[in-house]
Amino acid sequence: MQNLMIEENKEILKNNVEMLYKRLENDDFRRRFVAHFNLPFTPNVSYKELIGSINFLQTQLNFNIFEIAELIEHDCAIASSMEPKDESALNLSYEEVHESIIKFFKRKKEWKCFETKSAPTFKQSLFGSHEKYANHVKGFYNEENVSKYFVSIDLKSANWQSLKKFFNINQSFEEFISSFTDYKLPLTSKAFRAKMGGKISQRNILSWNKYNLLNSVGQMTTVFKEHANVELCIKNIAGIYADEIIFEVSLNDFVILNKINRDLLSQILKDKTGFSFHIEPFKLIKFNNTKIYVKVGNNGKYSLKYASKQETLFWYKLWSGWINIGDFNVPEFNNIIELNSEDYEPLKVKQENQKIYRDNVEIQQMILLNELDKINMMINGPE
Image 1 (cartoon, rainbow, N blue to C red):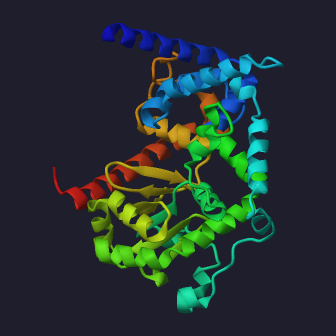
Image 2 (cartoon, rainbow, N blue to C red; image 1 turned 180 degrees about the vertical axis):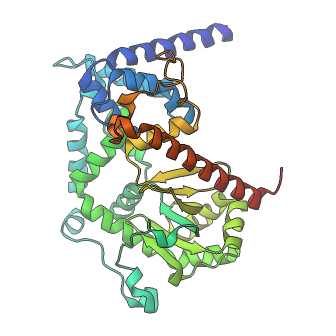
């Protein structure tokens, strides 16, 4: 009986994915699909390119196609029962859901204050002689910070945490949205969240994000000192953004932060501040002859900064072995993406410069692998 249910579930999942592939043939659906899940493609991505990258997205970027297909088919079933009929969940604007949410906030007693006032700025009392750090967003990604070690502390789901605190809401984002709609896509959609923030007042939300972040700096320094033996100095603040603060740390502290239980550290910080934070130690490197910076962490983790969506996808595919740069005649959908002149067009690389570009990408890959190996050796020792 259990085996039968498993097989039935597999068949349902398979049918959902097949239906999703069919829906993706529609240009408008495809644009909305890319926007909803913030995928590394331009809005006018072709069906061939998107489908050819699905397996890559699933295995390399943790994009669960089966889960996404299930959400979409669930919402499509609801949408198809409405008038006027619309069989595509991603063709829905979810305007009614947004409007209901806006009405909820406008009915709250705190709305007038939130709508008319941004968060207060910080004065010298908090940051002492380093007041400049409180109200100035420094450009962190620059040559001065290359080859140094840092720890990033950022608010998880910053917009929602700020709204929860300001309006005294005791629900998760998913619970809150579910109270307004039976649709499931808004619970995970980046586009839905962004539009919701814009309608409420993105400027004011960002100001409260930064206020909540900077108001927690004192607790950050205490928690890191007492529970990790890591000194976070105000003078070593390397960057401040609306929901993230970056401290320069020593090599020794970088190693400590990679070895300790950072989830536990985050929980202690949450108990002290009331906010959930993500803690990420990293080394900053820069690729030669490019504008791309890379945050390099432990266990093979890295992220590209100042890379376009096209560059990000191209480089990730290449480095994960999904593009074989020496073979231009692979089958269309065999999990390796054919690399041809069309792939270089979004990168603005002319045909006569493609070999130079490929060679440079290979060099950068070796630089990255070398950095990952060095960090792994420092933290985990020789294999």
